[in-house]
Every structure is written in C-alpha cells, then in structure tokens.
Length: 142
Figure 1: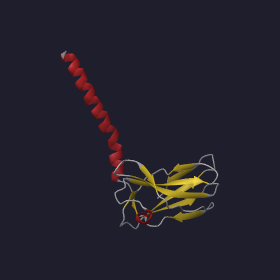
Figure 2: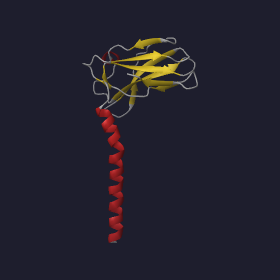
Figure 3: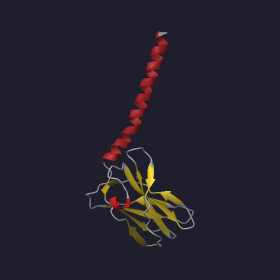
Figure 4: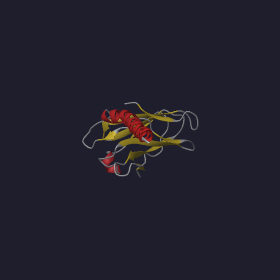
C-alpha cells in the first residue's frame, strides 16, 4: 500500500514539474515582449491584403478580433492601425497580433506577439508574404 501511495505522489510531482517547465519559456518570452501602441503590416505578398487586430484577453484567455479593418491594399504598400486603444484593444490584453487575409485566399494570425502599452510610441511592424494559397505568412519584423 505504501508503494502505491508513493507512486501516486511521484506521479503528481512529475506532472507538476512538467507543467512548471512547460510554462517557463512563455513567462520568459512575455517578459521580453515588445510594448507598442500601433501595428503596421507591409504587404509583400502576391495578393491584395487586409488585416484586423486580435488580442488575447486577460479576463477569459480567449482571442478577440477588432471591428476595425485596414481595408484592402496591394503589394508593396503598408497600413498602420490607429492607436490600439481607439480600436478596442484593452490595456490589459496579454498579447496582440494582426489577423490578415489575402483577398480570395488564405487568412491567418500573425507570428510574433506584442504587448499593448497605451503610453508607448512604438509601432510593431509585420510583413505579409507568400501567395494567395501557398506560403501565406504574417511575421513580426520589428
């Protein structure tokens, strides 16, 4: 019986250790996340592009999308959001990123998250690349 209790206790400790080590990279990454007040996306893809902004809610841990939209724009052009507070992103959002769409093609969330800091003057710049269906990507570049 003692062996069973010890085995069960070791299993619980192992699970707790695995959980702790799995969240450490996220905590460390969050500490260095770029603080911004706006987001820009450069369209370097082979398509007409548009984007909205998504944020991760501190309240319920889900992603939300703004009603604001960049409007459609062609390759080699850039669009920048208004201040994120003006388009509905809360100051306590855990992470922010663009959600972009190639007109008549693929859609997806940007790779690389930033943190909304209302008093920041920094702008996060992302690059949309690929084609309508092949290699579509939105990546943080600065």
